[in-house]
Amino acid sequence: MSNNRRKFIKTAGQTALSLGFASTFAVPMIGCSSKPKKDESTVNEESSAIKTSKELFFDISLAQWSLNRQLRAGELDNLNFAQTAKDRFDIHAVEYVNQFFADKAKDMDYLGEMKKRTDDLGMTNVLIMIDREGGLAELDAAKRNEAIENHYKWVEAAKFLGCHSIRVNAHSSTGTAEEVAQAAVEGLGKLTEFGEQHGVSIIVENHGGYSSNGQWLSGVIAQVGKDMCGTLPDFGNFCIERGRNENDEPICLEEYDRYKGTKELMPYAKGVSAKANKFDENGDEPEIDFRRLLKIVKDANFTGYIGIEFEGPTDAYEGIQATKDLLIKAGSELS
Image (cartoon, one colour):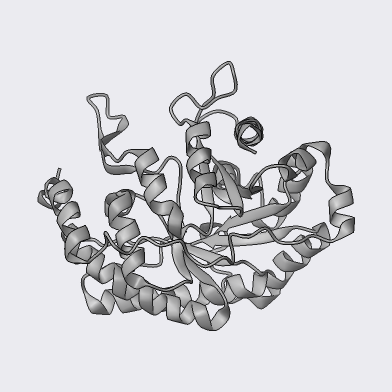
């Protein structure tokens, strides 16, 4: 573990105080988290499974990362993702990952085809998850500004596709928790100003490193202080430090409490990611208590999209369906 990581737990608490985080937790304005209205034809087309989900306090979307293996292998094309979500799972809202059309952010013909297909299907484009465009919390101002500008094209693409947000990462290659937090406040603030001009929110996922500490990330968002800068709480991404065991298998060396972290991030949430990896004989995720997490989500008055993100090693299509079934089962108990 690096010196910076060893300092993390001590520094994170100091960071929250030094940046004035403790007094700034506030429920964001209603907007992207509200359920959109659908026309009568779309409602009539929905299956009994989707109608069941309409009785929930949230809507269900499908995150493209759930099918990352199929997309990487060429078994599924990005342009056909929305069709697959509707035909295979009867899900009518999708969340994209920029890696699967990385060179198309400014290709209006390609984006036009994406939009046409989702429009024709009566689908909702929810957000785009952005990776590999640089660290928005880099301590070096030149690197940070380059990363900010790299995200502009994705804001514009999201606007064109009708997405309410882009999901970004508050990462840096170096720095203590306090240093990276200050840089993240600046980087996210500047990018959000650009997002505001296009009506696209900038939302940050707990996605490793400092960002997987709920207190740290919620404090950063509070310091940015903009309604269009929020969070995308992920049920499973609370590993702060990763490593490998004696068999060279990936393991989490330091993990933040997922329930505490979700509660800290929900006041700023404009979306939620329902991560699942495996299921027991009852259809529950044995390591992630969906009922407890959904109760936290509901208590935060969230009514927007919860995106299915199956990441297990087994069949992705079966895993997506099992995650959807679990969301409906657990959500129905709270509705």
